[in-house]
Image (tube, rainbow, N blue to C red; front, top):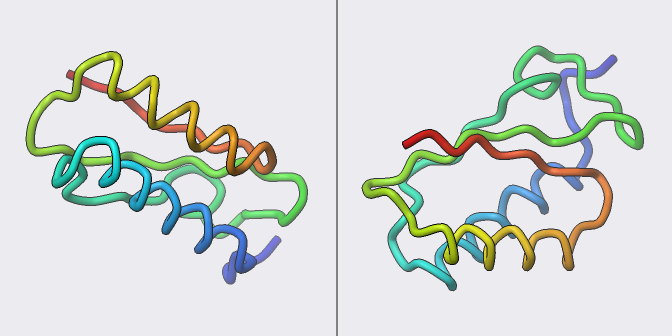
Amino acid sequence: MTTNPDVNVSRVRADHLELADRHAPGLVEGLYPQGSIALGDYRPGASDIDVVAVAGKAPGAEVLRRIHRAMSARHAKPHSDGLDRR
């Protein structure tokens, strides 16, 4: 158990923001860690990366697919989950 997630978490977070901005400029207003990272139980090599993205408007389904495909292509592991609530 660690409260200081490895550098990969920071990289995944930065990439998520960069890819979201590339596919939908200004869409993401905040990206917040959830799950094991937020609870201090992140385990490098074992944990996935859970986040909640706050958007100023509801993104279209195709925009979300493009962002998710780009993230999956860039980061096969660790798995990164997002929450889509409209």
